[in-house]
Image (cartoon, helix red, strand yellow):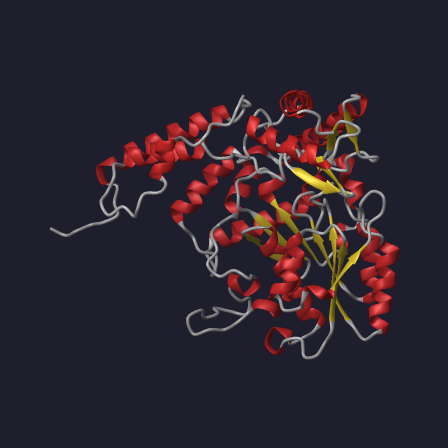
Amino acid sequence: MENKPLRLGAKRDAALKRAAEIVAKAWGEFYVAREHEPLVEPSLAATLKEALPERPTDPIQTLDLAAKVLDTSLAHSRPRFMAWIGSSGLEIGALGDLLAHSYDINLAIDSRAATELERQTLRWLGAFVGFPVGGGAFTSGGTISNITALAAARERAIPGSRKRGLMNVRPAIYCSAEVHYSVRRGVELLGLGSDCIRAIPIDTNHRMQSAVLTESLERDLRDGITPIAVIATSGTTLTGAIDPINEIADICQRFGVWLHIDGAYGLPAAGVSEKRSAFSGIERADSVSVDAHKWMFVPKACSALMVRDRSTLLATFSHNESYMLHSGESGNAVDETLEYSRPLRALKLWLAFKTHGAEEFRLAIAANLAQAQALYDAAKADPRFEVLPFRPELSVAPVRYGKNTSDQFQTLLVQRLQEDGRVFVSAAEIEGRIWMRPCFTNFRTSEADALSLLEVAADVAKSLHDIDGDHS
């Protein structure tokens, strides 16, 4: 009798039913804030230290174990997760992942309808934020999207650099002093060296100062340095600041420099009418990146790199190998991406747009924007809290407990809040001081969830004073 390994066999339907039950239970619970986060039980910790299993285990048992692991993990999908820049795990997107992973399509080559679906989704995303898409791809995250753009910018500024290296050219990259670390990582990986980064000072609203950018470009050109790209950030991780895109685009046009917009977090807000003017000039960029798994709410990983001119990507990544023949002049999908084997990440966003429509996304983003404003106003009016001197530009609303408390106290407060579990917030250093830094990018979060941070923080802070004495 022929051996047929790796089949679920008669238990397949039961396993699929059990998985659906687990997902339905999780989806229902994600709309309700937890009173605390469960701890990892000793038995589960022991299980997660077991050696490689050699023999099969019942799939229902393994699914139940996986559910226990996930439920004891830190899920960004919950409405009071306010740390870093979280994901929401949009339900139709999760189903899209199940379908995409079941079919396991590889977009390294032309995959027929799937290839067209990715291109259509890029056009839809571009239309949503106001960028004219000529080419691009969905990637594993903002880091890969930014590296892809920087590689294309390098090849345009130094033709042939993909083969011959920098050829004694001294490069420079220009960005805000609060640009995301992925830019520095990309510059290092591409062999440009992070010493070539010109960190342009920010203004009082934490935006790049365009006049200083001009001065830096003029100085470098006089010194024989070759500008590679300017990176404008549309929603900094620290405060949600939006660099002045139109002013920066004017400068890039004057000097003939590639303009990339890192919109990993904030760019979806360009689709909301009341914020559109803050992103004026986006259509003039050479490339933009957006993490759809952040403020487009779909599950990780789903970032997009979009360019005005597809040929810039082909000039950077195309190749002709004996195992990857070209069927025509257009090239394979892999010829415009950094990645080779690439899943159909676009399906989750395509399904989301099709199922909900663009307007529902605008409403959800607008709600998060309003939550940040509401928290800022409430904290400003509450004598127990301190806010920054400028209102939230997007959905980041930093607050401090106590007008005269120390950074040590703020750090300990955030640690205890995370242990408490009623809300989950992260800390950040802004202008040399430690702040609680809530960020709202979840369609499940309500204004009541956002405002709950103040009372929970005050409650935990009081317990710190009661137990540990005065930390101010």
